[in-house]
Image (cartoon, rainbow, N blue to C red; front, side, top):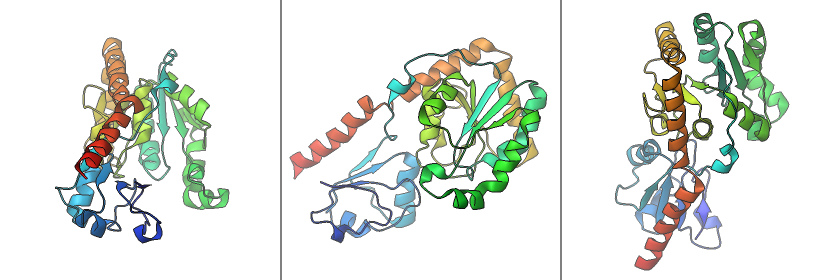
Length: 281
């Protein structure tokens, strides 16, 4: 039984059959389709219903395959401690090409409604293993723009070490993610929810699997580059800042939802699929 990602996989290069495919988290492809159609691959693991549909609708993977749909695992022990939430602290921690530009566009609107609010931006391509020069080429202008907005409460941090990011997540009240990127899981949203951040985001890709609208956060329809959408982001934030008890309830609901994706819950689902498959072989 091999655990593989479908991106750039050639099953024939392994010295044993590929039996389980953990689907790639980025662009789907058909590299395992023949093996799935021939029942050579026994289990397909997708990290959201959105991702499963990508493979079904875009590449002809069969509905009848042995699909297992869960979020990717999360280690909730990183978020077991409780730190006081800093009033007016907002966080954005994502690939810079997945929403930083529209967020910087809309931040002045949010800031005007909430003077003194601070937006912490932990964003970098360096976590992907690329060089600093390539990171600069891809997003240098965005980084400089974020750094130039310090007077507006933007705190650009770039790449942040995991313990420091966890501390930011634990102390932030809100996680902002205006994006059109089709997330297939969104670990960043899972982690923010685990820390009790109320997520205000676009309903792109798998984000509706990570955020329950009006329960753990808000899903804002529309192009995040549209000023009218920016105002809706600001309006939802205002609703909660004016109602601290509701904000606290949604923060706890976010923690509770994230806890269902802890490895203690996810791994048994995967293991049960393996066991069921082996018993039927």
